Amino acid sequence: MEEAHYEMYAKLLQVNNYIAARMHDLFKEKEVTRSQFNVLRALGDVYPESCNAKYIKENMMVNAPDVTRLLDRLILKGYITRKRNDEKRRQIEVKINNKGLSILEKMGPEALNAIDFLEKVSVKEAKNINKILEKLIE
Image 1 (tube, rainbow, N blue to C red):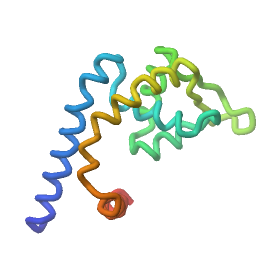
Image 2 (image 1 turned 45 degrees about the horizontal axis):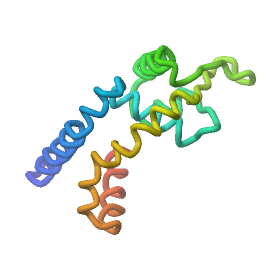
Image 3 (image 1 turned 180 degrees about the vertical axis):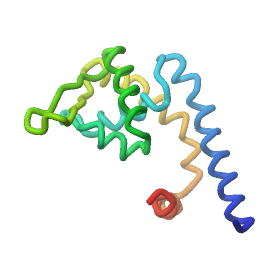
């Protein structure tokens, strides 16, 4: 591995840890984990439609048992609903409900404040970084 690649790896970890630290208090206050927030955000993006667990798994890059546990916890908190797909009986559909939308709405502005430092990067630079990051996760 080239030194530049290792440095990139270290910088990616540093940015990830920086974001996690800035959002820690918000998640703690709302009693939601970062993964749960990301699931709620993904479900909020497709609302009023529902989506299947596979969609969440692929978009969050987590394995199936982890998705199931995440969904179970969000159901227990009353933020989402789950039901079997009538046409594809083995497929589970999940949907954010009003309580989930409410917590997402409350957390949204605070979450944006926690990542406002990203605006140090121009839109053009952000698009280039996004292309590079997409290449890394393909």
